[in-house]
Amino acid sequence: MMRAGGISIALLPLMLAGCAGPSLLLLDNEDGSTEGALAVIDEGCGNPDGSTIAGSFTRTKLSGCAPRPKGVGQAGLKPDERSLINDLPPPPARFIMYFVPDTTDLAPGSEGMIDALAEHFKARPGAEIEIIGYTDTVGKEGYNLTLSQKRADEIKVRLVELGFPPEVITTTGRGETELRFPTPDETENGGNRRVEIIVR
Image 1 (tube, rainbow, N blue to C red):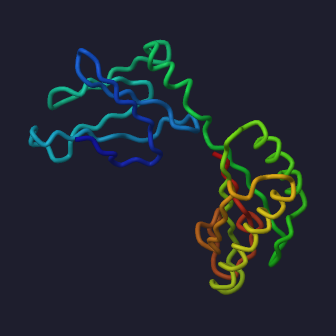
Image 2 (cartoon, rainbow, N blue to C red; image 1 turned 180 degrees about the horizontal axis):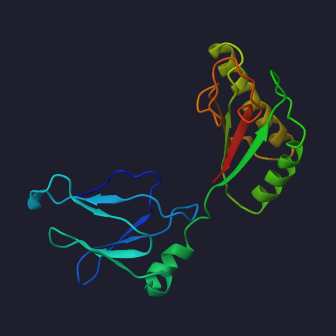
């Protein structure tokens, strides 16, 4: 049995079976970082915590009770592994836009992000867009939740007007949760008045 354990950013596993038995190949995260780890657990080994495997571009044979990863690097990838990696979709792209206080109007400097997003989307056929709205901590929690949803919906309207298909766009409002810059209540902060757009 294999499960993810203590992952801060999930690594991408590829299970590959061969004549020497199954093995696990860990790659970089989507953003190129190497944080994270996997716990490989075999109930027959009597070790409830399993063995921890970490490190990008490492191959581990999943046999025995103490699997040990071996660094192979990109140059050590097998042809079928390289082919699988080349066929993976590109990592998600993120765009952030900021707002004038207590409005759904984009702040100066964020208007250009609409055009950048449109260009990126055109170059990525079949992509889907997730828009998440946020506020700062000024105002009541319920009001901010509604405002954040309105901000996300406003960006969707703008994108649809540019020709984006509405069925590939989802919107969510999260109010003053998940502050980008933690602040006390009733604190104005332009970095928290935002929408985050994920294209995947």
